[in-house]
Image 1: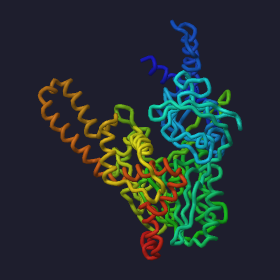
Image 2: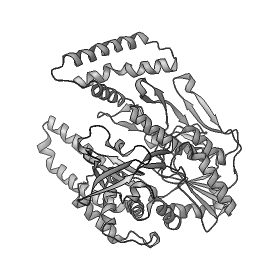
Image 3: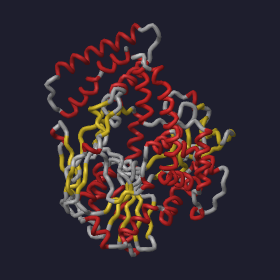
Length: 544
């Protein structure tokens, strides 16, 4: 109960920062000031009189983060380390070991070692668990141990890690790490130019423009822009990337907020590079935010064909606000709307279930809009592609596999038990898929369907109403049927699962560059894009 009280009372602490920062008069200013005074005295009394020694910084950190969970997952408090991480992500360059890592309570797991950077040169591989950095054990480090991997250029670092149960050590020298927005582009045999845009950092539009010009000089007469897995980034870069293919003066996105100054329309401001070249944009369930702004603009203005699966559905805009002592509040300031007027936000954080989860907009509640050519498009759930691909989907069971690292862990085991010389020799066979399902049985993978969740709730209510013993036999039959269904669902969703397994396995042997190279010959989404682009009639038919 005490935590909940703190959560409610400190709400005004951040609101006052917003108030001052936006110079926006609030009619409830007295109430804000009153609650701040209550919280200040409460916080003081706790730290002065609590039976055990308290940590004021930790208490405040917990209180702030607990409060923000009532808003949305994108409104966050950033300490100094978080602010620096955001700066690095936007700038696209930092000094470290050159690896994507995930910090856990006992180890830092290497998710990906970037080719030819220090971690790769030192022999670190995806799946390695770093347990000691220098003389510091990760398990004993109370803050984000991942920060220990960054440091001054050319500084040395000793690392102890666990690989397949064996303890190993290595040393490396930190270096500058450049994170390209466009990590790969290539002219395909049919004169399609393939461009991968992986993030919207400050270099995104520059790199896309450079890649497009180079591909056109090589003879490209059609373009495939790959936004799959792109989580977004800078709003202005989404405008600039769109501007590469869309004429000057076109509306790309509108933002709307209760704060008047955040209500804005964003138009293209530059001369485009090419407004006529046929274009296909690839998206999936991990294409979010700025990626959806670009895809939405291309779709609404009928500038290109969207291929893949429904995008993530993030229609909210954030902006950092400076707080004291180098900290920041990253706060949702507005919703954005595509040129046709639709907001593609999928989750409504103002409406929640009994257990606090945001409610997803139902398909039947989507609103219809029209593109420039009069095609029907809808709001409420991401960007729905013009051409849907089964292999791009992210079903509930696939999301569970990703969330619990089942695909990642299987790829790790696969790497150490198979020898793969060339990416074009790889095919994830039926026998491999059977092995994957056996792997799931022997691991701790758990998947709960929506029906199971409702069944649990029903049984809880039945116990309250003293019906549990009477309906238990029938419930057990239903659970048995659900178990059979879940086994079948793995097979039903095989295309999307195999696609993700293939991606993860190829990366283990040949890095991201090898994966993109593999895509150009074997990826069904790219093949579909090429099929559409090679037929002007088919391309025009989709857009008209």
